[in-house]
Image (cartoon, rainbow, N blue to C red; front, side, top):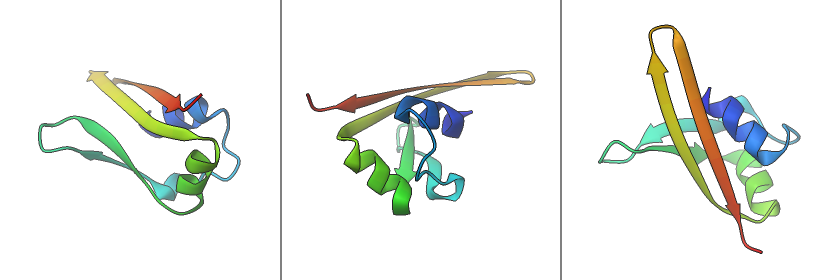
Length: 72
């Protein structure tokens, strides 16, 4: 769910590869993305300076929200 939400926040999957997106946790438990390869390049090329991730689950359902910030 988190990877799909990221791709949607980026506006599409051109240059984005699933294996280059990792969801990790900060010490306090906040979920964060670790991006590598061409996926990291796509994010930088689009001027995105911060990516925020929120995830939740209940029973068989998972949801994720991504906000991508770019400098104006």
